[in-house]
Image 1 (cartoon, rainbow, N blue to C red):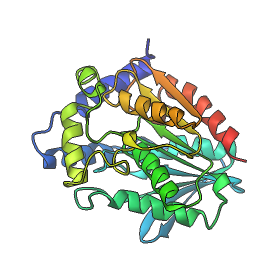
Image 2: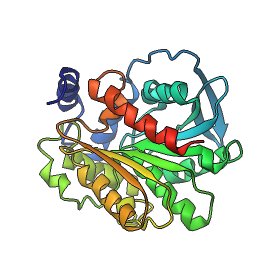
Image 3: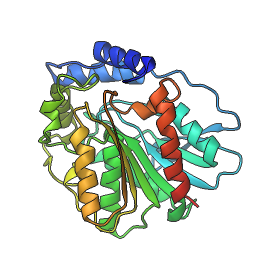
Length: 297
């Protein structure tokens, strides 16, 4: 059974975040109001310095220890239309402090003002700049929801372009199927506490603006994972995006990629980002830290 703190988070998400929007404008306004202005409180992390840089015109927030030994590029979620980096400062500060990592969080462009592939172009630009500071073997890509899908899409694009690949990648509940054809969309529509099928349909249309939803750079659930680095994936068994992570794991394993997939019942979408506020997030951060520790040298 979920912890009391997880139950409270689920109740809040169902009451305040999950909607069935009647228009694109309603969804964008709703998500930006809740994700961009109601961010989680940030708890200070001893020894971690917040900074900011610009990369190819893109703002990048940084969380750094005194002597970082490696780096993580973290791509925030928000359905491609919302989200801010500050939401992730608690979790990413934990990674920075425990493993002495330099965390870069890009403020990539959002739809509808900047539809596909603007977000992917932006995270690619930041990764290529990061290569000027760290060897690829000392970089991990990470992200959640739409950000998790962007991480997977970026891996596919970097591989296709012949660019150096990072040591590993981590995707929490990736929104990896923009065709919305996975069975979990319908199976979990009623019991998902944060997302609805209507939200996914509307958000998809805003982001793609007519582009093919089955192309792998938009929907990495349909990608070829040959020659990609190890992956760590998570999903709730009760969320609309459950099958996305499972399909990515299946395809990656079929291609010979090492995959760790964490599935939890009765938890909300992207629960690990709610460290340190819910028990399960605190618990599962240890598995994430082990993965990062193993792949960063």
